[in-house]
Image (cartoon, rainbow, N blue to C red; front, side, top):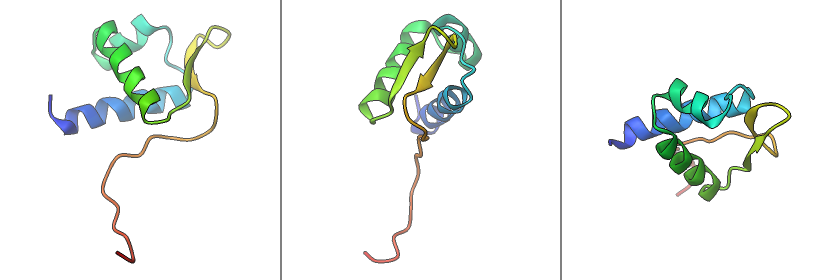
Length: 80
């Protein structure tokens, strides 16, 4: 899988988590077009990146414990 495709998957998962509208793992995997196993891999990677993502049974969604978002890309520094 290309890094660009992985980036789009991560961004989509991140968006749905921030909107608190992922549904259960099976539903989220279907929305994203992944197997549940692949979805759990991506959720694990988000956690490795420091994203405080967890399953909320009350909201029936994956959510972040703190407000924030994943940003992947190149940023130009003013000073190097």
